Length: 407
Image 1 (cartoon, rainbow, N blue to C red):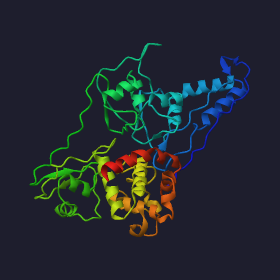
Image 2 (image 1 turned 45 degrees about the horizontal axis):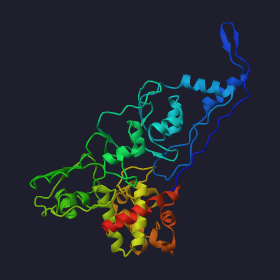
Image 3 (image 1 turned 60 degrees about the horizontal axis):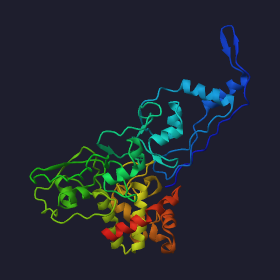
Image 4 (image 1 turned 45 degrees about the vertical axis):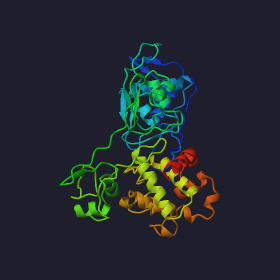
C-alpha cells in the first residue's frame, strides 16, 4: 500500500534575451525567448511525493520566473491557458499545480483559496475554488450573510473563517468547538450569526411490513441490520442474498417483516470529534480487537490508522484499488473488493495473527514481533507501508480518547 512519488520539475531560465525585432509586419522573438517558451509549454507542473497510495496529493507550487526570458515564458502560458472558472471539480490524475497551470493561475493562490497546504491531499470529485470572491482592490473581506458552510476535503476552520471574512475563534465559538476539534467532509459548520447546525436526527425505522431501505455509498448489510434493529442473517434471508453478495448505491433492500425491537431507547455512544458513522466503525474495531485479545495499545494503533487512512469511514474509493476502513488493496492480497469493504474482515486483516482471514498472504499488527515496544507511527507503518508514516502520530492522543469513551 505504498504510493507513487511524482518528480519535481524546475523551470529552466535563459539569460535575458535581446529585444524582439519587427520584420515585415511580424514580431520575431529572439531564439532564447522561443527556446524558453518551448521548454515551459512542454514541461509538467512541479509535483511532490505522494502520501499514501490512497488519494491524489497537492504538489509544491511553481517557482517564480526571475529572468526576462522566464517572464516572457510565463506570459505565453497565461495567454494559452483556458479562462479560469470560479470552481473546478478534481479528476483522476489531477494535481493542484497542474490545475493552476491549466488556467494560468499560481499554485500558491489555488492552495490558499482552498485552505490547503503543500502536503494536503486532493481526490476525484473534490471541488476547488480557483477565483477569489470579487471585491474592490484593497477592500476588506465582507462577512457573508449568516449561514452554513458544508465541509469539503482539505477544509480547515481557519480557511473557512478567512473565506467568509470571520476570525477563526468566531467560527469555533459559533459551533461550540475548540482548536482541538476535528471536522470532516460533509459536516455543516455554522458561520457567526447563525445557530449551530443541529445534528441530523436519524430517521425512524420504517414500518416493518414491506419496508425497504435504499442503499447509499458506504452501506453494508450488517450496518443496515443494526440500524433497523434486526440481524444480518435476517436481512440476507429477506432479500435472497448470501454473505458473498454485493450491494450497490440505489439498490432497495427489503427489511424483515418482523424486526427485533429497536434498541433506540439507549443513549447512543459518542466520542469526542466523531459522528455516528465514525463511532460505529470505531466500536467495531474495538470489539474485533477485544475478541482477538488485542491490548489497549493495539486498539489505539488501529483506531489512529483507520482515522488517517479513511477518516474512520468505510470508503468505496481510494488511490488505485485501495478500499475500506484501512484502504487495503485487493491487488496486494488483502482480499476481494467486497472483503476489504467489509469492516470486520478489514479489521481482522489489519490485526492479523492466528485469526487473520488472509492467512499468510498479508501481515497484520500481531504478526510483527515486539510491536508493542514500537511507537504508534512505527507500528502502523509496519502494516500499512505508507509513504508518509509520520501522519499517523497526530491521531495518537485522539485515539486514546476514543478508546476511553467507547472501549
